[in-house]
Length: 180
Image 1 (tube, rainbow, N blue to C red):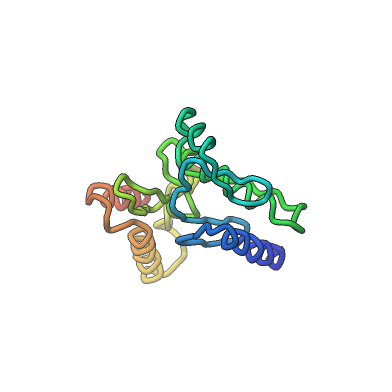
Image 2 (cartoon, helix red, strand yellow):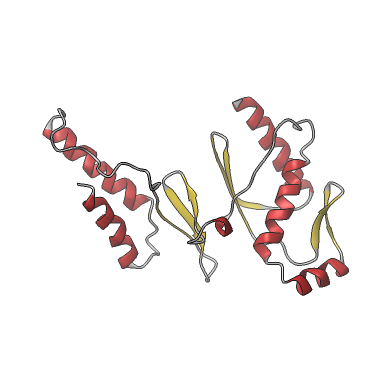
């Protein structure tokens, strides 16, 4: 499974390079892939296994009001589904558009791009996560409990951008404190 995904990654990255689509950042964890790239402008389409531009498509995009993110997603889907010799893999995509807060959850981090085109992130946990971190009556030694709780604070802060307003950073700590 891992070798298949690695081979797929190599083939997909080669396809992107061949079509001058540059990833600013890419990361894979198991079967999840996160790719960060600049938007693909109006008029571009994935057509017959390559990236093509046409003035008529540019006008269509403008008239349809298609957003840059939707167009970029469509093109990336094309690049992914046409990576030959991997027809048995079916790729799905999600973007910030799929979430009410316009932030893309990834493991224990939520990622988004702000109005100033900065990539921001904050600590994230699924709604079904346990509502406490380390139970006070656990059989762990006191120093282990303190160390575990300290590590949790550090992890949450490392997964929260320093560029965020102080209020949002404090909210991450406040939610943690409620679990104590």
